[in-house]
Amino acid sequence: MTATTPMTATPIDGKAFAAHLRARIATEVAAMKARGITPGLAVVLVGEDPASQVYVRSKGRMTREVGMNSWEHRLPTDAPQADLLALIDRLNADPSVNGILVQLPLPRHMDESAVINAIDPAKDVDGFHILNVGRLATGQKAMVPCTPLGCLMLLRDRLGDLGGKNALVIGRSNIVGKPMAQLLLRDSATVTVAHSRTTNLPELCRQADIVVAAVGRAQFVKGDWIKPGATVIDVGINRTDGGLVGDVDFDSAAHVAGAITPVPGGVGPMTIACLLANTLTATARANGLPDPEGLTP
Ligand code: NAP
Image (cartoon, rainbow, N blue to C red; front, side, top):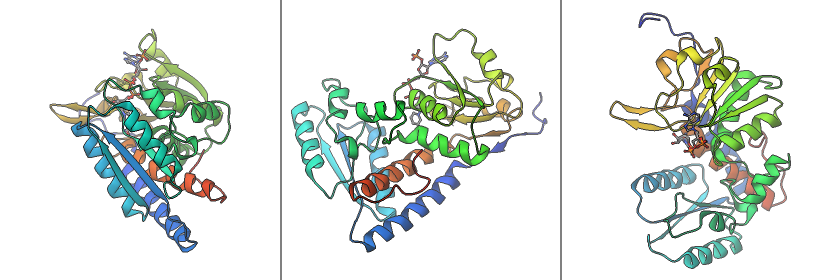
């Protein structure tokens, strides 16, 4: 393959898809406001981590842009866990708060599971509460983690019915890999989950109609691992000297795949859009309204 080989893959424009989704959410928020309901999202940040501060700021901005209420709560790095749990209790009890997001990672002295499981599952817009994890795994109505939900929307948009497709998820984290596998299984794909102990990854990849890469290693998945025509979703965000790159070697993969998400501009923008979608869904459920169409699996 040379630099002059034409790219065959259609780029999957997550940025445009997410913008469209946010516009739809804004319309639904306006309709809810007309009924006297304003969805609201509270984001909690503990500490000064620069990347987390950037994420929290952009989450707040986008929440306000779709017309929702947005609150930001900050605690110092050395805050006792009891202070965070007391804040979560207050937010759980506040009927104007429909969604609660605790920005991760937390400082080391805090027990992440205990904190996440203190959030009211109905307000757990990250979908990390153990009840939501169990509900997703057993096919019940759940709050679904934002990044895999965004990947699912892109896949359905591109492929329609995912039933019977061979899907490979690379990575088994609780926030991306495992819920992604659950969602694909729910859509009747035949799902394989690979991880650091997987021995035949290139071979598995060559059989996959769908590849979702959530590894955290720059340009790890090579073009010659990809089945011709496959749909490739690159979740990775890796900062390199050459800029932001994904977990897939885009240049080589784009010559083989049928469609591929770029980094940046692929999955990333979908994550925040799905956070807003989850906040809208949580608001609808809290008010006895049906789930907004197309925003839940
Ligand atoms: P993580 O918790 O570090 O999990 C990485 C997974 O990759 C693990 O399951 C690990 O296996 C597996 N892995 C590591 N080396 C491997 C190898 N050589 N072969 C096969 N699998 C391997 O990461 P994460 O939180 O899931 O995030 C993954 C990537 O997505 C990161 O780049 C992150 O920045 C990005 N991300 C992006 C978004 C977004 O909005 N776009 C959201 C979340 C995450 P083991 O379990 O065996 O260790």
